[in-house]
Length: 456
Image (cartoon, rainbow, N blue to C red; front, top):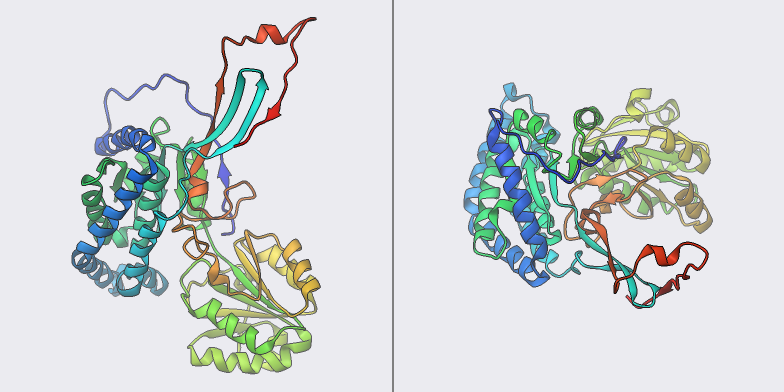
């Protein structure tokens, strides 16, 4: 994610004025209004009721597995046509069935095991005798999520919304419309049998509806666009709603001079080919010059076995004859495919400088047996995730134990990295007194505050 960011917009006043005459896409406004109203009721439900709703959603998805996979097959067939213009990597993300379907539904059930993100006491303080302040977590409200051709994202985002007490407006890529329509129908069927309203989740399918959503600051509290840097910037420039961007993932693995080379080879392969179109897949491999002669031939052989196309710097080309030359543009490219750029570097400092120049602040890894070098790398590389001897593919909400994620943020402002439940709540201050007035704490005879922290 090279330009993920959080942009906060001024909030509207307390008086909400709804448009008297709605546009031609008034259904979007109505869906957003229902999501807002339903989200407030959802937020008030106890955790056990929201968990019950998630279990019913998981059951409904499993019951609709045949319909969902049939719809997905149609989307995949249409995307595979030459005139569809859908890149192979995007076609890979579009597929939804088998283990991916199983793991996605498991993720919904796993959310029920997590701590309730609502009502967590962050601060409990006596301001004075009988005057107590609390800060507790509350839902954001309504989320507008614009995501690519990944049907599993619809399930993850909707379920996170239910668990965190938020309404969700889902806008899927055009390639996944049939899949997401079947998925959202199943989700709504599950919610209909619970204490949560099916209206907390709605699906948008057109660019026109997206444009309408970006205008709805009275209904939508946060927009999360998942896509290219250019698209994220477009969204930020065309809305007054807060934006949390999920854009490119240019991830690196650096093979240090003190690396276990067998480990480095397999770790780099896993980071690249386990799911090449994922945003946490390896795109550039950096190799210390002192081990390049030994490491690169063995790695190239392994990469060939996995049909990975390699590009390399001049130093790499001297070792791997016939390799395609890498250009400056390659260092800043997210391939989302079985393509990998390789650069030989003089030391860890050059590796860090390269990553901080061309990386997208997503996830970067060092492979080394030297703890001090690893510590240097992890403290100097500017990324949401900085790993030591672990595949970049671990950068995922499900693998982090978040149950799922709505996206991955590389903003320095929180939330950062995979955004799960904790990133979907804000907080509210609760002050309880007994007729306490500020005038008693002002002037020459002002009372003093006690400011005593109390047990949470």
